[in-house]
Length: 308
Ligand SMILES: NC(=O)c1ccc[n+]([C@@H]2O[C@H](COP(=O)([O-])OP(=O)(O)OC[C@H]3O[C@@H](n4cnc5c(N)ncnc54)[C@H](OP(=O)(O)O)[C@@H]3O)[C@@H](O)[C@H]2O)c1
Image (cartoon, rainbow, N blue to C red):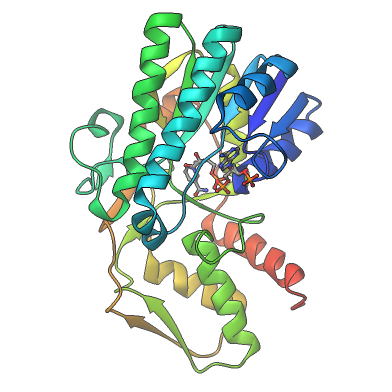
């Protein structure tokens, strides 16, 4: 299978690129820093036309932490949408049999949703703290529906929780929450700190996807039929920030105390995806245990930062 990964230098993209290449697929990657700006229609068209893929993974994205996506709200929203506009228009102009697989973040669910079922996905507003990013992903979904109707272009849209694991960005504006906590805890250990501050109350419950699971699901999606309406990729299980902090403390061997700085806002109180449809579509999927994923990530950062 000829596979084009858009955004192959990103956190998910680089892990997916490695996996698909090891599995023997013919894979090509494109990203801005490697010469293809997906905000430019001509460059997007040429990249797709030149390789002529059967499948495109759209992993190109403009995102970041809550503060970042608010400060650059217009750029975040318009860049994500513009990239998708160029991708779908190019496919329509080149070959409508090319299938698109793209993950959306579960922050695109209504802000007040707790157990998030796919039926509720568009039933209320995105939390205001993540307005630009969450709504840009909803807009890409609408776009994919319209290209399905007019051009019969097939898309697999997936909804995934916040991800952690090896290969994340080291830019503090972009590092994902759990990885950021692991890095800070390792530094606190190294400098013998007596306290470790967790931002917020520690009570929000979050579901986390370990990056290898994320990638494995993307690979399995190659065999899914057209599924425009998004599918939750879900374990049906979440951990409070405090619980995750405590696991990280134990596995890092941090001797100090964890304290909660309640001057930071918490974001949505609970985000756990309902897994009913997922177990039906991808039965018997074995997710990494949370402790194992955290352990792997700690080992990765210890090696990266020469802390072994
Ligand atoms: N990571 C998560 O926790 C998570 C969870 C759920 C869903 N998702 C979704 O999964 C996808 C990938 O996420 P990620 O964490 O891997 O993102 P990421 O690390 O921020 O990577 C973004 C990728 O997009 C590329 N890109 C950005 N602007 C571009 C442009 N104008 N032209 C070409 N390429 C451009 C970047 O290329 P350069 O490096 O060259 O700039 C990079 O390869 C996103 O759609 C995200 O919403 C992620």
